[in-house]
Length: 240
Image (cartoon, rainbow, N blue to C red; front, side, top):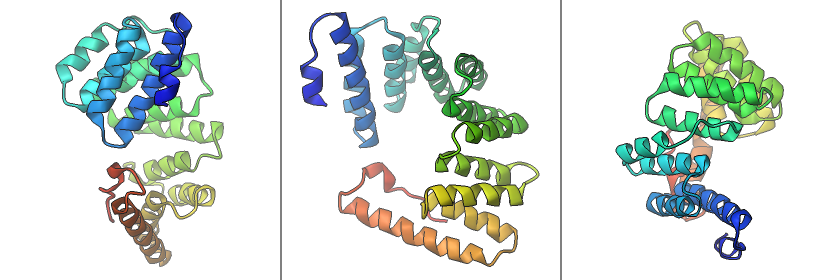
């Protein structure tokens, strides 16, 4: 990726591509725990295209990660009214990080209007609604998301978790969704952990089997992490 960034030609098209590559590298560095390196990449992207909405939004995210909340707010204040769906989504993401859930929801409503078939926009809107206590609306969005992207194990998992964590749990529905998630992505730690919880609430002896499988998988993740085979941010995996 470093070579690709250096080889981009001069001119606006080259600057835009270089900024996009810097944003990609920023995310990789964050995943590896290098938040200062991620911030440096976004500062460089901003220098290339200082008024670009996406650059400003991602820079705000990077500043939020390193604890510079005032700097993050200042960058977001410079973002012009976005029209592109990805710009709207990014602004919503930053607003959510900053605790402006109502503002984040307004932006996600706009993003979904711009691209109603985008499953992950629906998921993000569901997430914001859930944080606002709008549980029925969140579940509606999650159900719509899995219809748009039925091969996503993660979306089925999110639906299952929401179904059993709502005020009046839908345990059979949650189990169905988590079974679907496990079929699409077998032996995934988080799915197994949540399915064990649902089975336990249903009085299903299979809960112990799922819990043991989840623990076994989690231990493998931790061992592989210490061997340097996985990013460091997986070290904190929560055991049930």
